[in-house]
Length: 249
Ligand SMILES: NC(=O)c1ccc[n+]([C@@H]2O[C@H](COP(=O)([O-])OP(=O)(O)OC[C@H]3O[C@@H](n4cnc5c(N)ncnc54)[C@H](OP(=O)(O)O)[C@@H]3O)[C@@H](O)[C@H]2O)c1
Image (cartoon, rainbow, N blue to C red):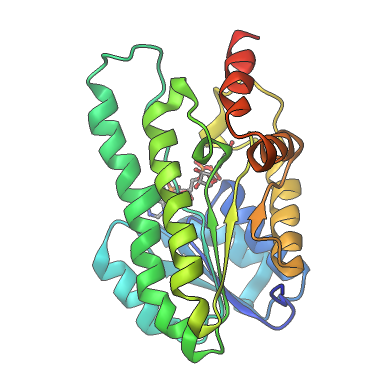
């Protein structure tokens, strides 16, 4: 089906840097009428505000805070595209027995899974009233196969993927399209220590927005992601071997 960006009103979480910031630029480049930019610190949105002026509406939004989510939903009643981009990778390491996996994993689940779920619950009625609209959840290639050095993050992103599938079915009756986005490495603060080739945030965001318009339900926005998408859709078990090869290299 596809979702028309031109003239649309969107909300992007984690919009102050990285992929989120690039998504806001990509939405305006495609003709979005207004973007609510969510950030934990609205002062971090100054550069975006300078680029886009009054069409950019800063919103105080920590996706782990129900009061922030409710306030954002009360204010952004005209949204027809919700992009859940906010995410954390709280721990990386080689030691399976490290107790940090538990505390970091809870923090990752809080943002990457429960934050995404709660945002969808708060905005689904708004999208329904506005004709159905669309939700796009930024998951990861790590949603589809575990990256052992990021094992708790991978689990949280699997949960993002799972709830994306659930929402696609549960919200289809109100006409809401639900997209899952599965990036490979993108050159942001989150991926600073990732040793693989990285897409630029701008290129990844442009590909995401283009595929939302084209109605691609599972979006693989960069070359590494596309290879994961190819294996996942044809040969899911081969993904484990593919990651093992990447780690060995
Ligand atoms: N970079 C990659 O290689 C890659 C690959 C696959 C998927 N992803 C996903 O892409 C999304 C964007 O990541 P990124 O690469 O752009 O990383 P990033 O530069 O670290 O940006 C993360 C964004 O999420 C925000 N955030 C973190 N916790 C939040 C919370 N509780 N409430 C609201 N916002 C919160 C951050 O805000 P603050 O500035 O306040 O911390 C920041 O704006 C994430 O979901 C990530 O998992 C990234």
